[in-house]
Image 1 (cartoon, rainbow, N blue to C red):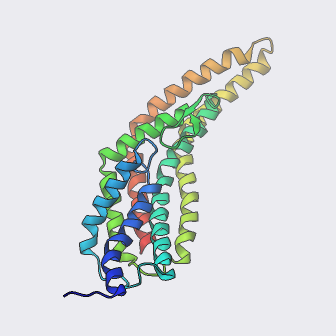
Image 2 (cartoon, helix red, strand yellow):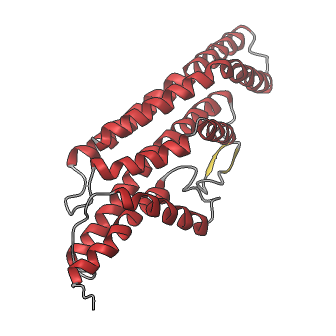
Length: 257
């Protein structure tokens, strides 16, 4: 008759549960797959499927008792690692939300907002446009498959243990926020510069002819000119988005290493 100790049972169960907790934490915070419009059951099924595929390829996991402080510590560490990786990718999409906010405020569309279905918060309507557009680009570039590949590679670079993430990882997360802000500013710079020149022109017109109603004239012209600049910028937006995607995944792999 086969007999198993508590540690052996914990190792067998943990060989599937520890990867599952990391993958679930990743899907909880990651874009696209972790959005609000993806049902929780679908996310759970995807997490279980990915964990079943990853578990046989992993090295030996720590043999601990099923209900112990060490087991709870490993669970917390795996959820934290997965959520950190998902939050890292979430900043990629928030970059384009920030891009839309900056352009919308400059062209007078800052008051036009709507509910973002993926996050459940009010954002500028131009940010929603950029977010939907970049989501389609992300899926067309097979970004969702690269996400699953990165979470699978994380088990080799950060094995399952009680040590968790190093302090430098959190520092890299903070520095990536500054990179995302600078990238959004560089993408918005052509539109912001053109709209700033338009506002300067209206300021000169107001000084030259004070009787003109600058608010009735300037707002529709700035709005139409801003939409025209956005249409012109779409010519290089695809290459810029592809470069930002590649840079983000390079930074993410450097984060794991």
